[in-house]
Length: 368
Image (cartoon, rainbow, N blue to C red; front, side, top):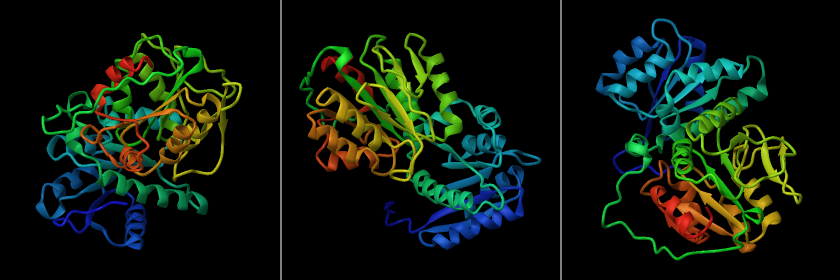
């Protein structure tokens, strides 16, 4: 649920697409949803859009833009918008293959993609009713999600703003479980803003650790490339896209692929399952948390990072019921704090930790 401030009663949306049909379709989806969403304008390409967006009456809370357009395409449009008036953006496209999508989005640069300021939604296939319904659900969910993005935190150096003195200081009590890495696991769950936060953590992790499993809400077209990029940026670590039937190993980091729930079986193997979305997403953090709690019991550390919604809450309850540990990211560093806050408010977080303090907390707790 998105709570608007007293000064803002509507979420203002601007649409950019060279297809008049696409602009109309998106407008109808938003109008069907109704309050608090409002379409304030549209443009057939980036050039016209940037001219309009300079005017006060077109000041938008969220911008939806196609990627492939004439005159000024979506990539240049996004760069132009972010250089003048940073605004949360949903990039949409009819590009189908993983290579096409990743090649286009890679031109944005790592900072924009990882910050959470820009997210991607694939356009629906024509005459495919089920895919059209999928697009409508994803578009609306991401409008609310992007509206909640804190762009100041998104573009702060390293994603970890300085904590002011009046913010609560977390007591750093050491929590230790079985210190054999073979018998433990760390699971990291994140959504909007997660890629940047996760890269920060991995940059500060040592190469020796229990198995680490990452569940990041991300389209299936993007997870493989993201995992490869994480490996390039953290060459001292062993990072890979999780594969079916792989046995978990110490000192290895596994990224759950998009489009599958990632389950850990009794033999400590990865099982990738195509199933229904849980909490509107696949992979779902809850599914993975529940499965690792059943296998590792008290020797589980779950990290809930930035993101919108409540994914991870039910799984955190399961981990806690088996004696495991949950750390939640403090709202001072979360791009969107609703996901960690859901765990905190349910009193299922052992520690509430700003992102930049998590690596040292894990070292003090002898988890890494």
